[in-house]
Image 1 (cartoon, rainbow, N blue to C red):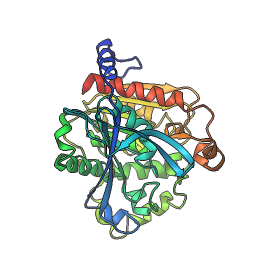
Image 2: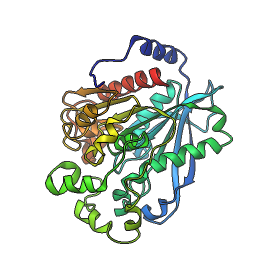
Image 3: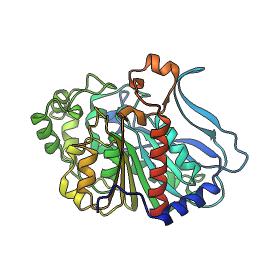
Length: 355
């Protein structure tokens, strides 16, 4: 049942055991394909970029994962050793989905921390909806394709001769921020309803999830609706409510998830997978009441943590002094370290108990 308490002591003991044997973190990059990547990508490339963080062999030398101009980054997002050898053995796996207009690297602060605790983390850059490429109407509209990106990533990892021997696919989890939290829930079995989201935005046009996002101000809800009536998006819209789940997911971690209004309530009620949700009570992009709070009440095995004074973009990589001057997303009230530490601790407890 839904609760706000912490996890059982044995989960924390398991976490402690993992932390005592933490290894350096490695990073490798791969590409694969998905059926709709070319529709979503601005240059109509069918590729999907995958970043993998993992426990590396002792002695690996890490480098900072900065975002922005060399020597003048806007965000700091952890550190990892490029192409380092894997630590011996098989490791549990966590799939990771970034928010609307984000990137795998933007979530590196989280992904590298989970990898340091003993997990292989696979993060993607969702085509047409990431901060490295031009944003597209298709990328911002075909939200139900995001879980398919994660599915393609894990399929590619299982075929990769370097990565596959180190995957324990019996211990699979998923995590995500914002639209990535939505992605994580759909990956675990929740169903998206395009009609439900349309109805909500028609009746609540001023709700933040129905308004254009800072990352793509031209992607209005009206423009998305119009695009869905035209090829090639019209053909894809027929698949919106399909089952986009990934078999074998045993735990879900969602940071400030949205838009929960687009998920069928009955499918959330039927989700047996343990879910942990963390959000901020000052979030004006994915307001808690219709999003994370609603999900936590509907999910039968959910734990919710609400952070006072925390906003939506606190869950991005750490803003630098330069970022605070130059990036609209860095207009934050509180230092981000506390938010990041709380998210990492909650995720480790969830995955330590269930994976």
